Length: 550
Image (cartoon, rainbow, N blue to C red; front, side, top):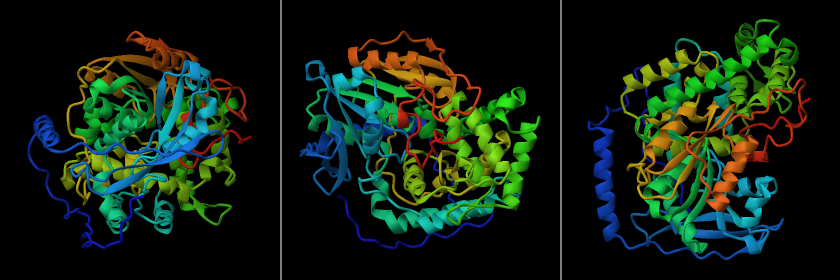
């Protein structure tokens, strides 16, 4: 385990309404930077000795799983120097006679535990995967059991999300920037020595060491959401070491790393688009939806304002307001059409000020364990211009372009993807672990990219863009609402299994159209075949499960 003593660096100067503490962006194009960084990386690699491959000492950790720790370099510029300890887990292939190797399972995020991802979802994996592979996962550096980083403590995060509004006022920008600066200072105070080293280039290097530690010549990998970006960076850095990479709910890596405002804008519009289509369904099928009394959009806008003006007390003594509602919708809309009746029922409960509505559960300490790393990793990975004027222009534009959920996200505290710009533009730490090379992955084995047309979290066009940027990729399209395809579509799931097990690559342009439609009544559990547990959900506290809602 990586340990550090707390130190308090020079306190950041808080910004005012004009955000005067921000510095102007350095000149130079992203393309030039990529070429220069590629050259520098190759020169550095030629001079630097390889890091030692970790030794994995496995022990039983219940349920047939084995756990171990892996020591890897904290800073790959000094591969023989300090180390950080990564928590890893595996379950051996159920049929040794069919075993083909190890399957790395990478959750979304950033910030989700890969150990929990494997443990919580193993039994729901198709039998062909469990028979053919040792199923492997790990907590990436700075997350979960692998030296989890901390920024705001629970009390400060609770205050931030309690003070946030579902309908922010006209002067919300200045306070949002100041709170983001406080968040950044808390990151320095609580996790300063770790911050430079949690970016995705170092995560990809960790994966390659773990691959070697497991005795695998090449990598077999399923990554969803942010896990798709990790897989993309791995392929870009180690193309010849790819056996099979399935990238589900894919990122446009170039926009994510080099044009983050463009990336953010598409994500705002995708999220609001999903919410808009849900409200259209409520208007078309009011009996099943149960919310809105014929005007669901008007009812939703009024509900946000009413909750801001008069928050609902929660069972644990907290408060739920319009921001709480938006925050929960942002994640739960990921479930697709199967959840729509449950969303309608939960909105109706919120309208009645019934605090048993899962949309009125404020973010909890377990949520904060996810949200802090989510912000930090993206601030390390992304190259935001440092201009305060660009920040204000883009934040304002995103709030306007996504009126249903966007304003709460744009002007809220640093939490999930949509709320990172205010922190990342002011990011105070070094970015030693940021990947800033090409994403072509020239010479790799075929890579399978999956995109969902109505994805509210990773827009479908991101998957299209990734499939075009990669040198050797096949795109599978899932025509549906909701986030990711594997486990939500029998067609897509079969394609992924055939690819990972037997290297059968679906023809590029393959389309799956087997989305589960909204049930006529709110289900207590998702219909069979529409879920693989948390493969769809990530961490329970990140996305509240709705199976028990009646």
